[in-house]
Structure formats: C-alpha cells, structure tokens
Image 1 (cartoon, rainbow, N blue to C red):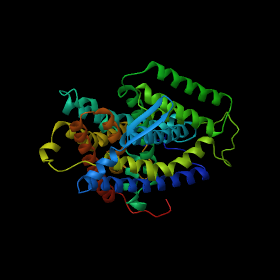
Image 2 (cartoon, rainbow, N blue to C red):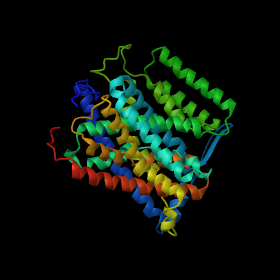
Image 3 (cartoon, one colour):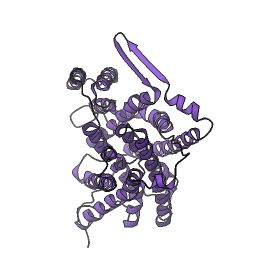
Image 4 (cartoon, rainbow, N blue to C red):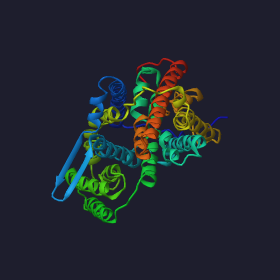
Length: 412
C-alpha cells in the first residue's frame, strides 16, 4: 500500500540543531561505554579481595548538618538520592527541550515514539506480573523491567559505526526520553512513602518561588539552582523520593519558545546552557559512579536455580522479550493503520533490533530496584535480572543489527 501521508518523522532540523544532535549522540555513546566499564569494575570489586573495601565505600557514613537540619546517610544513598537528582534534573531539561522545541514538539513527531514507549512499558510490566503475581513483596518491583538506558544503548550502537541510520538513533533517543518521563511518573506515584505534610508545604513554597521567577522573566540560573537545592532538602524530608526535586527544577528552567525573545540561532537559552554544562558531568561522573555503587553483585554462591527464580526471570523476560515485543508490535500496527512510517533507513528487521536495544534497562532499572526492595535478597535478585537482561539485550541487539544493517557511507 502506498502511503501519501506526511511522514511523522521529525522535520529537517536546523544546522545548529544538527550540531547539537551530533554532539548529543557522541556524548551519550561515549558515556555509555564508560558506564559499561564502571559496571564491570563494580563486579570485579564485589567478587575479589577488594570486596571489603567496596562495601566500606558504599556504606561510608556522610553527614551534613546546618543548625537543627541534619542529613546523615551512607555514601550509597547520597549517590542514589543526591547525585541521581542531578541526573533527573538533566532528564527533565531534555524532556522540556524536546517538548518545547524538539522531537516531541508536535503531534506528528510524537506519535511513533510515544506509542512505542507506552507499549514498551506495559508489556514488560505484564510479563513481570505473570511471573510474580502471587508474591506481594516481589511485585513491588513490577516497574524494574520497564526502563531503557539511553547511554548504554547508544554506546552499543556506536560500536556499529556507520551501519546505524541517523533515524534509528533519533527514534531510540526519543523513545528513551518518553520512557524516562513515564518512569518519573511511576516513581512519583508508586515509590513514595511516609509523607510529611510540613516538608511538602515547604517544598510547595520552593516550587512557587520558581514559578514566580518564571513569571517575572528571570533567566539567570543561580536563583533556580538555590531554590532547587531547597526543594531537594524538603522533598528528601517529605517521603517523596528526592530525585523528583531534580525533575521539578528542570521543568522550571526557562527555554526558548515563541513567546520569548531569546535569539535561538545565536544564543543558548538558560535551559540549553545548563543542559550543556551538566551533560558531561552526568555522562562521565554521576552515572558511572551510580553504576559502580549499585552494580556490584556478589556472584559467589549463585546458581542457575537463582537465575530461574520468578523475580529475576520476570525482569529478564520483561526486558529481553517484553521491550522488543511491545515496541515492534506498536510500530507495526501504527504503520499498518497508515498513521506512521518508519524512519529512513529502517525496515521491520531494523525496528526489531531497536526493540532489542531498548531492552537494555541498566541505570533506571537498577534505580527503581533500589526504591522497590528493602529486602536485600529481592534487591540482589532484581540486580541479577537487570544485569543479565541488559547484557543479553546488548549482545543480541548488536549481533542482529550487525547482520541486518548494511554498511553505509559516513555521510549519512
């Protein structure tokens, strides 16, 4: 059937947008490789004579006290609650930029990645539930296999070089952005506990301050960052997960749109300035440190029976099978209905390979597992499933795409 409708892939970007995309893909790909190295080092440290030092590092007590305000946590929680708030700040900046002026700015651009991302969350969650529905404690981690790690996935794609069409990278990135937005909503709705009304009121005051800055047209970043730190402390004390403070702060940072006067072709908006500043720190420091602190699974004593237990199997099947099935099925149905066309250079085989790459959960999956499971055994089983699924998805996705994608000219 010949489709004469407008293609729902993004319109041709400007020269500056192309440079930004190129820079983004290079940075994410390199960051993904660093992420893999950090995870390997964590596994080595946890399963070697360095295991004692590794645990001491994770449990190092860190305390900050200002008057009556005290925050005392082991280093692992400072990384997961503090540094990951910066990661979520960056995620929120990317989501806002994409929705205001990027790939999610119009319905036509949004349809394919949005529906694929939703299906790529729903199917893994259903598969995990099929394995664990009779275990209430295990079911707390139903969201573990729903996430995609864009840095890890782009790092693997980078190994394929010029075979990968730019449309595939762009679609994968956009699906991952929508995926992150869904993960943020899941964390806010399902992983908050013991709410403190007083702390929430002060958090609302901090948010109101940022809204006021927006309304008054303030474009300096410093006031937003100060209020962001205040918001983080309030949210940390409120029972809502502290990383959500990073999300709210990111969404409050001003960005170019049709209603302001920032000359987009000549000057970065405040949002772009902060995003460009944070990106290297997140890619090369925060995420690798998170991976090193969280991926150190002790393998001694593990057997095939442990891998085949319902919790890790639910995670593995959710990511390895659920992600590609959900994403590819959604994409094929939408194309059959005439709503979308696949990006240039992608056919059904390439779409399946992209679905496999989306099964690389890693960072966000490990993070959700840390929120879901206080029980050490369940947490370790979830980590085992995430690591196995991410490794299998990476290897199978790489091998499949290498077989089905033709070698392309560097000018693509």
